[in-house]
Image (cartoon, rainbow, N blue to C red; front, side, top):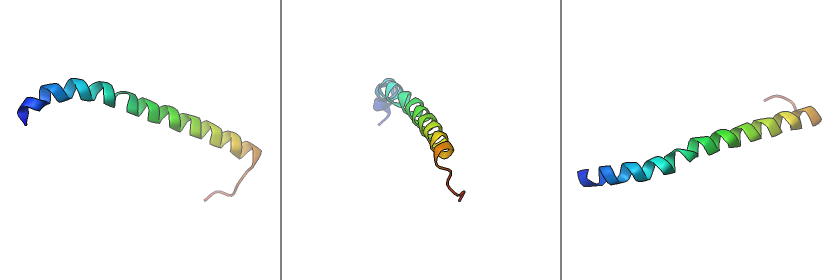
Length: 46
């Protein structure tokens, strides 16, 4: 199993890096859309 580590790291890094970025962008878009929607249609807080 040890032999796969040097191969897995360069493959995993480019795959793993965009994921938190995409999540952060998605959350930012959702929060912005949610705040805009809240301005238009105020709904009761949970």
